[in-house]
Length: 257
Length: 267
Image 1 (cartoon, rainbow over the protein chains, first blue to last red):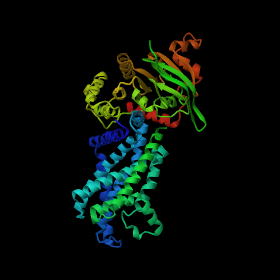
Image 2 (tube, rainbow over the protein chains, first blue to last red):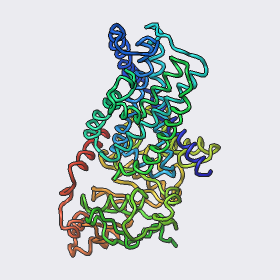
Image 3 (tube, rainbow over the protein chains, first blue to last red):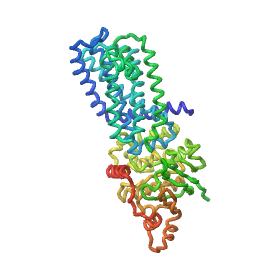
Image 4 (tube, rainbow over the protein chains, first blue to last red):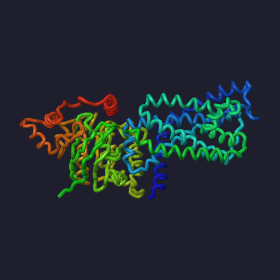
């Protein structure tokens, strides 16, 4: 089997392992459902009454649904590094690193499993959107597009998380860094308000924030149906995810040192 | 006639100027049960990490079954099995799933996987627990499953880092029974570390003692005991003679925290 086949096949094996773990114990998925429900049901409902935020012709609840979905996926992915540290402490990571598995496959496997966990959030958000009567475009094309974007976004943020884990090495430090990163990433994006209302310096941050591109893609697919910007958004996500996966594959084994 | 399956030549590892392993050389013969002993912080873990390709040496070389750890690490990984000190099976998966994942990662052909897994489950007396979640296993069963994962691809060399740490005497004996069967059946070379000197004395063909990054002594248990000039010496006496320290005196906070957590989990 050549290197590329090895990477793809073993990424699949590792992702499959994560899916099996989720199927044996789905408690995590249920507890993680609470956060997007609170954001949409409380924050979204309350802010939609204010009508102070320009949403370009859609309701505020419609506007923030892709943002909340992005936030849920991102928050799962960004704490993925914790599982690396936990696996290191358990000895599982050392055992995986000693197998003839390409480092890139170890990273892609984790990225794919973060994506699978992220997809579970999409189901929750879609179901709750129906309850709140939020109109979403749910065609075969849009759903396939949403799956692809979530896998990319979760891949990027879990890759970033693995890099952080390989630097900080302990759970305590990781939690601190994770908290410092997640909220600024969320608020410095177009998830809950448009970039145009931000001060100029924050607009610059938002435009280099990959989370904004994920929100834009999901908003195009689920809300506006205007896909003129979609190829660019997805291209950005593909490039940053690939770059972060290569850096992560280099850094990842250092977590055991 | 047996040949050398592990050849370590002038292996050195430095971390920011600190020399963890200092120019060590030794060989391990085929089918040998080889104990690698040393106080905490002596360089044991660093040496093993280099041999199993987790860490690149600063200088020197080691060859495992004719493959270089520095230039042919991919080949070396096919030649070795590794059982870490910590629990390295996934408690949220069944025994069968844990084995299947390793079978796939070790490139065992799909046509052979099921048979190999079934053979390992029979060999380790785990057949009746094949579909049980591993978090329900006892400490001894967990260790056996970890050994099972490490031998699925039938490696000529098995590295075990404190394989019986945290186990009761019956479970320890059971683990070694299986390791000896493995050696006798497949000719597997067993390279292990332990803090149990009585265990090392009982099971090892040869012993190496590392201290402050240097090989302080190497030979059979009897040879090491004779060097102490004490006719009643045990391996523990020999260990103290060569290292000049008592067991478990060293170790940092992180190592001790991990060890105790693992011992608690194994019951």
